[in-house]
Length: 152
Image (cartoon, rainbow, N blue to C red):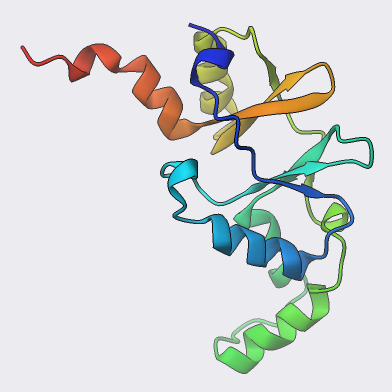
């Protein structure tokens, strides 16, 4: 089995120039969408030529929010002030750069090793420099355990 066999082609992607505020709105819209079956919200970040530039994860945004934040705040005004600091930043300022990707012909066992080694939620699938799909942890699990679905 290869990456092409289990990838989702409806890739949630965004430009490097998109603001953090717009990216978070897009993550929220995509969360729970059936086309992203049980996927953790996150976005593939594309450069100006449409190639893979990075990945924006919820942890990327939380890290940006909390970077330099005073300790102890927990009310809505506190979080609003954190959001004000980052909302207009381009996501290129907070995304995970140089993401690891796989090719269409990557073996599923190799993809599984990436998930285990790096604790990923998702891995982009590329054809040359173009992102053509994404593999989520849940889809990998279901592909690897198909034989468990057969009733004894």
